[in-house]
Structures are given as C-alpha cells and as structure tokens.
Length: 259
Image (cartoon, rainbow, N blue to C red):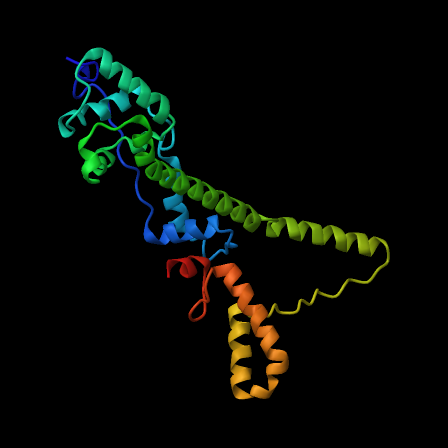
C-alpha cells in the first residue's frame, strides 16, 4: 500500500468548488477591477449581499493542508497509467506537488479539477509532474482569488457609501441651526434667509455628448470644421472608458460590462 493509499475515505472533509458569482455580480466585479466608478444604483442590496456571502466563505483562498492534496492525488491513481506504486515514490511525488502547488487555494483541489486533468487530452492519462499540475490549476486559482478580491472591494465600497449616507442626522443639523440662531440674536444680527439651493441639473455622459455631436454633424455637415475634432476626442474618451463604443445609453456600470 502506498503512502497516499493509506488515506481512508470519510476521515476528512474535502474541499468543494466555491460558489460562482451570478452573471450580474460577475459584471460588477469586472467593472470594479477595471476602475469604473460605482454609483448607488450599481451597489444594490442583492449584489452586496451576494458579495458578502462569497467573502464570508471560510478559507476559500487559504492554502490546502498536505493531506488534502494527497487525498486529491489518491483519487487520480486509477485514472492514470503511471501513478506512483511504492511508498518511497509516492511520498517523494506528493512532497514535490505540495512544494510547488501548496500555495494554491484549497478550493482548487476538487473533483472538477481532477476530471479536467484527465479529460484534457492525451496528456491527461499520465500522472502530472508538479509543474504541469501547477499550470493546470493556476487558472482556477486565479479565478477564485479574482472573484473574492472583487467581492471584497464591492463590500468596502458599499460600507463606505453607507457611512456617507448616514452623515449628520437631522437632529444634529437642527441643533446646530438653533445654536447659530441664538448666536446671531446675541450679536444683534437679523435672522438669515433660508438657503436657496439651485437644483442640480444632470450632466450628459460622454456617450450622450458624442451622439449629440454626430447628430449635429449629420444635420449640418458644414459644422465639421469644429465638430470633427470634438467627435474624435469624445470617441477616444469612450474607448478609454469602455474599451468599445457603447450601443445605446448606458444606465450603470454593471450594464455596460454585462453586454
């Protein structure tokens, strides 16, 4: 019996593949990682709750202990044509795999990744060398880390937005207003007139400005002298922001990246 064959079924809990983010959350993660500014409409409660659940999963990105890696390799024995057959050989090969692949998240050592190795083609029938196994598992590890890090950033953005919304309470504002009124009265000043705030008018987005310039140019081609340079500048801004020209009017960052 080899070293890895001594592992008995049922003696430990095997890792399971992490929960995949929904398509909606995946689009938001991609937007955050590309530096797209988030708005309150993007950070919906459903998306933030889903991100918190992924971040809160225990040890999803922590390295797996050696026994988990050995257990994963044990189930590869009947699936390959040249597995280790004696204790010294199995111990040496498992030790090499742990040394090279030991920093992989525990969530990569799943039946799915083992099946992916075996079904990849002619190479899959052979026992993997440490470097080959590392290259095979790397995309899975990168995806897990990328999703978790994106979810962490979304949760932080939501928490920060929540603190801004809390701000100063109405009671605190009223207390400050009373103090200021008493001070003005004590100094002989008349009461200040209520503050008149101008309504905030929505500003057109870059894509909307680009569409309007194109419409003006189509209506009057003689304006091309000054519209053409402006259109080129706006097109460059759109390409730099979205990677391509958006079709229609983008309503949120998540919708842009979901297309």
